[in-house]
Image 1 (cartoon, rainbow, N blue to C red):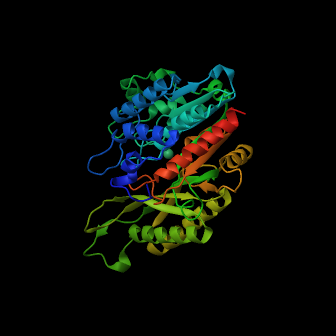
Image 2 (cartoon, protein in one colour):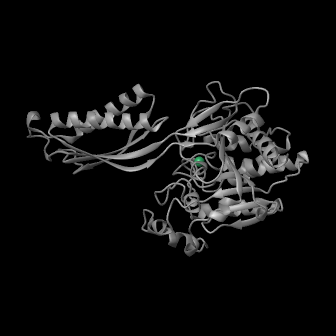
Length: 429
Ligand SMILES: [Zn+2]
């Protein structure tokens, strides 16, 4: 099937439709994609609403268990609710693990997460069809609650496992309806008392490789169907509070106003400019206004800045420049500006040796694209404890976290083949 000829949003139908390539990887991929396709899919938007520990999540997890059983893989759920399917004995150690996540953002696309899990099972099928004999244990993993759509914190499953989220912090998480994470876990049949770090499990992993849809267009702009990740950009969130004075929109002279909306608007434009000049990213995507009346000058505008850059120094410079622009304009507007850093994630450099090994296995004869990403992943969390690498599959729209996310069928198959080459090269030689 040619790229871009889908008849359903997000190309979810495309990868599951007729006209499959004849390879075993292709056909195995198809059957799994078809079975997952309807789970948690909103009929009107075509987007996925697979939130952690919800009914849709339970259906995805039942699918995972079924795929493990269909292949005779040993199935287990770890203490943090992550699902594992083992080929070989994990007690042997030095395992090669691949997988991703099955949960989604609100109205997410079909590929972010599931492509990595489906490709992992398909790659095991491909290994089997090649007659490859793994000398190391292999596992497929589905990390729970990667997107953080329900409880507001991303990568809860992998963070708990890696000891980057304390159990008592996790127990405080609540969804918009006031349901706590332990309550949601319990309702889904998982024991919330068990959550916590799992160093023995991580010690048994020799390499983790996550295949993921690319969340940008670098591969589409001339790279090829599959790329290897170099790093995850450092990123953070900053809250900007612009404090002014509420007043009447009809009776207050312009020169008498202390209007924080002006300062906010100028700051948004400055953020764009500073980021562009530095080759970084800066986004105000969330804003609150008080009192939020049509005929009232605002007393407070609160905006959240998400900023990312290739290195931490650039990121710090960009954010400082935006803060300075906000303060300078605030002084002119009579508006008080305070900036609070709410979160920060340092740069993740994937293991260079494993990255180079992957590149050589995926494309022995020609250089494979090696690219950084601005998005967080379970692989980034695990990289602190385990040699970790990522493969990206081309996304022709570049759009992600949206039903418009897509991948061509041939590219999905190329991803499976690349992943099978990697698993074979790491575990079977
Ligand atoms: Zn993802």
